[in-house]
Image (cartoon, rainbow over all chains, first blue to last red; front, side):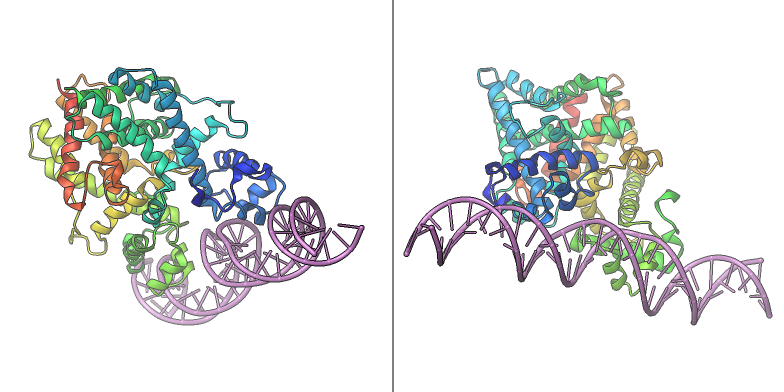
Length: 216
Length: 216
DNA sequence: TTTTAATGATAGTAATACTATTTATTAAAA
DNA sequence: TTTTAATAAATAGTATTACTATCATTAAAA
């Protein structure tokens, strides 16, 4: 993780890991706007000042967990596409991993991936929709997201080296996988997917969107 | 405008119109997070309490101006697609209107459409990324966005009645027109568009994306 | 003219987002 | 073993935010 995200590395102490674990639970429960360091401190029986020693403010903490999520997604993609040769299959795997229902991973003790996925769906955009996005970008705080995007863009370029918009298409896939899911659950008339059962339809929509564009 | 958005209709009084006019200027200048009713009150030499008579809170005010924007975009689309018969041309017109650089309209005295467009690009998602999105949706607060989406979905259905995802594709166009523009200006490595000059490339990307998917 | 409605001015509160200071604990050096 | 130094925790405090309440003033409608 980028060292500029925190004042003290939360992975290195018991308290730090508790901050991460419970910030995920609490943001998921009450939303990022209502989330405060004071409420978090109460949950883990420490003090507000205790949390400020780890994170400058709650936005940095959001960035930390969002970055963690994108790094995890890229790791999963590397792992699952490792032994695939065919670029078409690699792209399909990426779509499947991004649009399928996420379950708690269990390999990471203090991070609940299912909750984290839902946080990124509901709050993820707030990590860059700020007045200081350019500064944050200079500090490389969006690197995990950009790396994932570049990896998928790479698959697209393998599939069709002449396609003109691999990066925009890759960011479109990632963003739509999350925002169509959000619409599905909250504003369904913006989608063609009815209940929560329709998760395979989202993957079909994305596959159709991508492959018809990049078809050689 | 939906009456639930405000406590007192800002269109009906001088002060109300000043609130709208200067909230657009101020949100554009300092961002929605830093924007407060107190700062706005200072700008227009009224009091904080004066603004609270019009809007319950700053989120409702954001929703008001965002809804105004989507209604304006739909009006523009109706106006410009009115005498077009060909569904392909209608879709192209929609893409063009959504992805082109917006200039101040001048027909509306107190609303600067250029600034409003930039606000929707940077802050628009915050209007629905909340814990009360379902309630707000029940109160029909997202109707203008959904209407625009449904209109574009209608064009898509005209073009190809068999295409399976007209609503998701329509919301994808609208969202990407704004978010790719944001990326272009702030996180360019997520796109294939270099400087601000590349605005026609965004339209080409979207046209390619849409028409290759819905091609009969 | 009287009533109603909108605005203005002032004050007050609980919560938020921090910062600073002091106190306690632990670890290393003398 | 005692002193010193570094680290962490606890407490307190501040400016700002997001409101609510009250009351006087002005303007428009009945």
